[in-house]
Image (tube, rainbow, N blue to C red; front, side):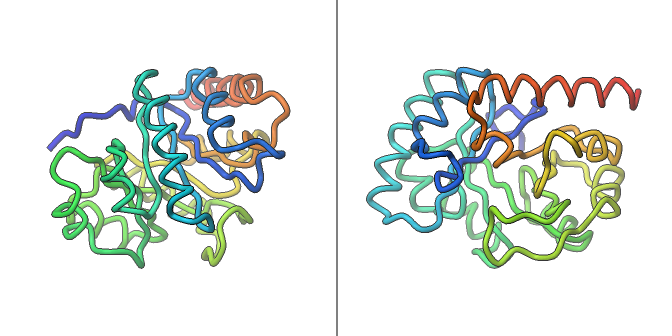
Amino acid sequence: MQRNYRFNTELYCITAEELSMGRSNVEVVKEMIAAGVKIIQYREKDKKMKVKYSECCIIRELTKKAGVTFIVNDDIDLAIIVQADGVHIGQDDLPIEKVRELVGEQMIIGISTHCPEEAQQAVQAGADYIGVGPIFKTATKKDVCAPVGFEYLDYVAKNIPIPFVAIGGIKLNNIPEVIKSGAQCVAIITEITTAGDIPERISQIREVIKNSIVEEK
C-alpha cells in the first residue's frame, strides 16, 4: 500500500536541540522549512513527554501548513496524538506489525536497520522506508552500533525495493561517497543544526548532492 507521503527528496532532516547552538527545535524546524526541506523528523530522547507534546503540536502545524512530511521518532503514542505523518522506530521497539495495528493504515512507518537481515525483515513486515546506518561514526545518538560502512548501503541500494535513507555521520565532505554507494536520500543532523545559517547550509548540501548524482550518471 502506498502511503500518502513524499519521499522524492534528497534530504531528510532530524532535530537535535542539544546540538542546535542554543536554538529551540521549533526555531530550527522553521529554518528547515524556509529552506524547502520536505521531510523532518522530531527526535528528542530526554525531554519530558509534556514538553515533547507541546513542541510537536507546534511543529505539526508548521509542517502541515508547508506541506512537509512530519515524522516522530520512537514515540508511537505521541505520533498518533499530534497526528504526525509517520513514526520512526528502532530494532528494539515494538514489531512493525504491532505498530501498524496502533497507527492505522495511513501513517508512515520507518525503521532503522543495520544489516541485510534487518532490511529484508523490514520489507516483509510492511515498513514504508528504512534507515540505513550509521554509515560513519556518529555522536548524535546514544548507544548507537558501530558504523556499517558502505557495504551494507550498497546491498540495500541493489536489493531493497522500498525507499531508504542513509544516516550517521554524514557531512558535506563525505556526501559524494554516500551517493556513490547508491543513496538517493541522506539524513543529516549536526551539519545542519550547528550551522549559523541553516538555509544557506542546506543549500550547500543540496548542491553537493546534486553534483554527486550528476557525476554518478
